[in-house]
Length: 251
Ligand code: PGA
Image (tube, protein in one colour):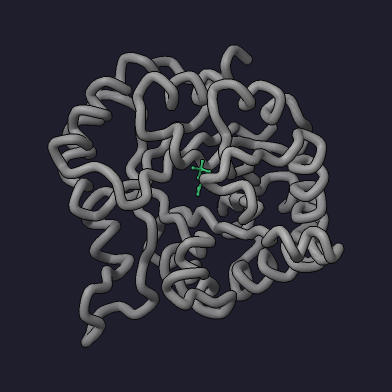
């Protein structure tokens, strides 16, 4: 059985004082959660979140990592830096990074390798654009994105990785994939992993859905056989909403 994982992706939101306030409010609400709970926050919030999350099972996540160990890469953060700040999870290849910051499948793979080598868990984002779905390319595209991202990892590392299937047309739009669409595409991703790393490995890899997931639609999505959790943007910015998603409202 795969343990579900609900991760908040705060994106470019919350100052350190706001982060402290949110996590302090969240803590009692997610106490005893049946799933792994992660908040992926701006790097300037790491210390505040770590401090506020003390005594809870809320894990710290980052939103990106550079693939070089150190050097002349102004503005970037290495895996070792994140690790030393107490980061356990790193979102890699989010569609916003692909769209606005030139992220490619190849750089996603380099970042995944750096993240795993430092002992952190990658949350690897894949997903199709609206026109790609309409043209019938979804399955081929998400399979390709997933396999390139995982290239060079061992079976064991693949089993530990988290994939987030996020249809680009569903992110921040209020348009959510139907439960069946999400389940079907996640099944395709799992099949692609099984084809290369074996069924036993693929059955361990957790695959989340992401894209306008909220307290209202979480129950139906989480009831699907292939969906192991969610990557939550908008609904992770309010403690009450996020805690309801964590509670799969109500399972
Ligand atoms: P959303 O974002 O929940 O606001 O659609 C999800 C994401 O981008 O990870």
